[in-house]
Amino acid sequence: GRVASPSGTRLAIMSVMPAVLVEPPAALLPTPKSPEQHTFFADLFASVGAKDVPPEKLPYLLLNYNALLWVEYAGLFVVVARKRPYNAIVRRFPTVGGVVDGAVTRFPILARAWDKANNSASKALSSRLLKPVAKPLRTQLGLKTDEMLLALAQTSIGYNFLLPLLLIPNAFMAASMYRWVHEASESKNHAS
Image (cartoon, rainbow, N blue to C red; front, side, top):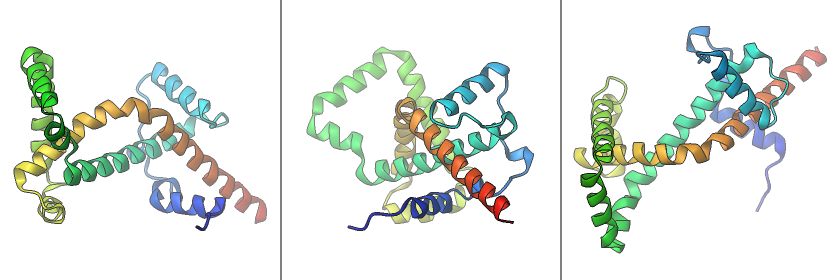
C-alpha cells in the first residue's frame, strides 16, 4: 500500500478539523474556569509536545480537543448502533447480563447512572439539534426509536468509561494540529 506523506497526513487531519484553520469568535472558545484548570490543560498539552503555546492560544487547543471528543463520540455511537456490543456479549456470555442486572439492582448509583443516561439520550433525541437528523439516521442505521435511544444511552456510558483512555491521545492530536497550523502560518509569514 501507499504510505501517506507527513504533509498529506497533515492536510487530511486539518480537513477533518476546520476549526483549527480559522479563528472562531471568542464566544465559541472554551476557557478554563480557574487557574488550576488552566494549569491542568497547559500541563497536559505541554506533556504531549505543545510546550511553547502562549496562554491566549490555550482556548484554541481546547476547541480542537473538544472537537475530537465529538468525532470520537459519533464514531462510538455508530459502532454501538450497528454492532450492539452489549447485546452480543450477553448472547455469548449470558451470565454477564445477569451480573450487570444484579449490579444495577444492588447498587443504586448504577441504577441512577443508567436512568440518567436514558434521560439524557431521550432529551438529546428530542432536541432541536438532533430531531431533524434522528429519523434519517435511524433509517440509515436500521434502528427503531427505542433501539436508537438504547444505543445513545449505551454510547454515553461506554464513552464515559473510555474517556480517561482518550485523554492523552486527544491532547496529542490537538497539540499536533496546533503545531502544524502554527508552523504553516509562520512559514507563510516568512515567505511574504
